[in-house]
Structure formats: C-alpha cells, structure tokens
Image (tube, rainbow, N blue to C red; front, side, top):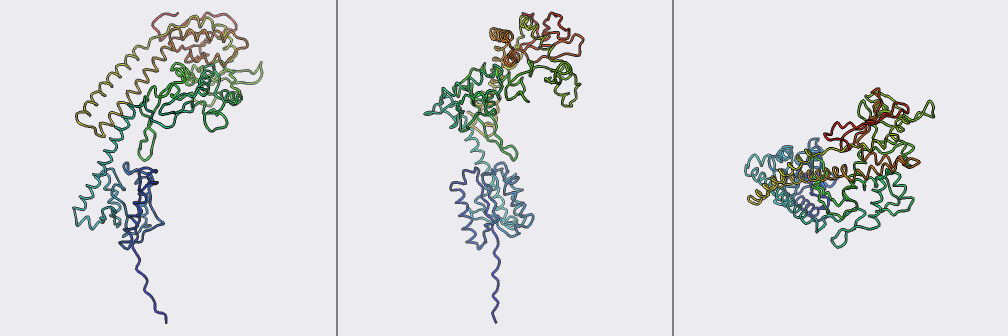
Length: 531
C-alpha cells in the first residue's frame, strides 16, 4: 500500500501594492525597489506572494486620495470586502505614504478599513506589521503610524511649496529663457531663443487677412490646399480645425498661457495660469487679433450647401436679430419666385423653439439697406466712452496689486507656506485676468473710435459700390461695425434697427415698397450728438 503523504500546509497569501506619483517613475528604480522588497519579505516570512491578483496604481496620486476612490487601492478594499482576498492575508507596501499622503486624520479610515478586515499591513522599509490586535495592545504602534502619516503629508506640502517657488522663479525668467520645449507651428526654438519661421508667419498673416475679408474657414482651407501650401506639421493637407485653432490662439500676438495639472476631486485637469505677454515673437498685431475675435464671436460658421464654397448669400449673416426673442434670424429659401424666394426667419422658431415663426422677405430688407447705406454711414453715431468700466477695472487692478505687495511682504517676513503660495497664485491669476480685460477694453475702444472706424466705414463704402456685390466682404465689415441688426416686423413702420458697436442705433425702413425714407440715428445709449 502506498503511504498517504500529508498535504503541505497552505501558505498565507501576500499582496504587493506599488504606487508611483507619475507614470514616468515606473520606468525608473521605484518599481524595481518596491518589487524586490515585497519578494524578499514574502520569502523570509514563508508567504505566497500572489502574482496574479496585483494592485498597482501606476501614476496615481496618494496626495488627493484618488488611489482609494478610483485607483487600485480602492479595488483592493473591494476585493477584501467580497472575500476575493481572504482574511489573514498580508498587504505589503514600501511605506505608509504609498497608501496616503493626505494626513493622518484623512488616511486613518482607509487604514482602519484594511486592518479591521483581518489584513496584516506591512511597511517593508521598516519591517513593521500592523494588525487590529497589535494596535489594540500597543498604543505606541498607533502613534507611530500617525507620526508616519503626518511626516508624509508634511513632505508633500513642502514639495508643493518648492515646486510653486521654482515655477515662480521660472516665470520670472520667461522673457529671456523659454519655459517650454514645444512651440506653435509657425515658430522654432533655436539656442534657447524662439524665432519666427518667415514663410509660415506669412501664411498665418494671410489667414487673418482672409478672415477679415469675410472668407470662411472652409474656403481658407481649400485655398491653402489648392495652392499646395506646406502644412506646419506632419499632416498632408490643411484642416479647417487647424485654421480655427490658429485664429483663436493668443500665441499669434506673443502671449503664452502656461497650464498646471491640477487634481479636481478624482480627475486631473489642466488649469490655465496667468498669461505671459511677449513670450513669443508676435506674428499679427493685437488690433488684428481683436478684430478677428469680434468677427468670430458675432458670426456662426456657414453651413449647408454653400459652406464648402464659402459663399455668403445673406448680407446680414450672423447679424440679423429676431425682434421677439433677440436671437439670430437665418436665411430660408422657399423655392423659386414669385411664390417662393428667400426669407429671414427666427432660427429658434424654425427649430420649434419658444418663439413666434414669422418669415420676412429677404430682398426688400437687403434693398432698403443698400439704398440707405450711404446715409447710415454718414450719420454714424459719435460713440460712447466706456469710462466707468475702465475706471472700475483700474481700481480693481490697484487693489489686487496692493494685496499682492502685502502678501509678498508677509512671505518675506514669515517664510512661505502652501497656503500663502496658493493665495499668491490666486492673486497672480486675478491680476493677469484683469490686465488682459483692460488690454482688450483699450483695444476695443481704439478699434471703435477715430481713424480706425473711419477706415472701416470707407472700406465698407468701397465694397458696397462694387458690382456684383461681394456679400462675404461686406458682411465681414458690417460685423466689425455693428453688434446686431434687428429686423423689426412687429411695428407698422417695419424697420431695421442697426446697433452700432460704439453705442447708438440707426433706423432703416424696409417695408414701404420703394418709397424713400430718411433714416435718423437713435442713440439710446449715448449722451452726445451724432456725427
């Protein structure tokens, strides 16, 4: 008879928990070190190190607790709860800071949940074991755990302050020493200096010039591809999305917006920091950029069968407003005349929204405007000063600068802390935001008054006189002069209410079948007189 051999006693299982603050650290020594420590401990204590059910939070932060909420530590706790990890097992970590850097108070519930489930928690660097029994019998073990967690939080706070200080110092050198390795496609970095690529800068300027002439982004894309203009990257052809990106990128006026990777709850988000002016060499002027932004904000992209050709059929595209809801009125084509033809209708009502659907014949509206355009431009309101808004901005800037000076004085006397650095960063962001608003206001005011507006008016006159009418170019100039044109069909007079960017309104009657109407300026917002 064969003698029955006694089954070997089942070894207790051990699970290794690795965590790195960034994915890049997994390529370095941290992973090897933590793995070796776990393997040596398991061998020395006759434990079976589970190599199938591993919980590795690669690149997940313990500082915010995300490794518990969304990471593998949370998965480990769930595995313990469902008995996938049996009681009596071991959890091996390099140090307690691998589990949490939130501070002892916030970290204790996580540690208690692990230990109270019958798991033995081992810190490999010190070789200490923590169980519910040990912690009940030895209060010093609990205090030791708290001090270890306190140290981890303190180190993280100190590191945060140092990173903030290093970034502040780096920003201070930003005008002479580039912060970034990558630069926009029309620039190149040579010997720690950022320079324009002449041919590409010309392309960017051309894109802005075309946009100001009313040429749509689809048409610009087609022009560049038809002209076989080389792209700025690896793409074979130009794409509309990249044209839009260039037109909205403040880098064209030399501004760089750094970003900070910040955790919001359990997610990482790129938070924009204070803009750095004159970081890049500018490729277009601030005035040109501001005009294009005004144009883009006031104009919805072309859609439908005319989009690819960039054809503008509606002279008032992006400007026509519904008198009922104030929303955009769109051009609607209802078949061939005389019964059909083109109309203007509220876009909201057209899609079944809460507004009254009323179609206004397009031709009489355009005819009336072209008929009276010379008088409209001649009687242009003088414009209103936005002094109050400018004064308010100036006062806010002075207050923020005083607060910043006081805070810097406090830091100099008492030394920096994470709280003071965060407060300083918040003030810097507010200052940058208000300075940008002030710059935009000054550009906008300069763009609405004096020779600049007169030049726009002269350009619009010239475009309206050409035959055939270039509606795209005329529409682009109209959007630079007006914020909206209300097609008021509700009044018996039936008039267009032209709302000037500098303030004031002008009426053009369109409902009197060819009868000449004298337009008068109604400057509701302006205290002065018409030009």
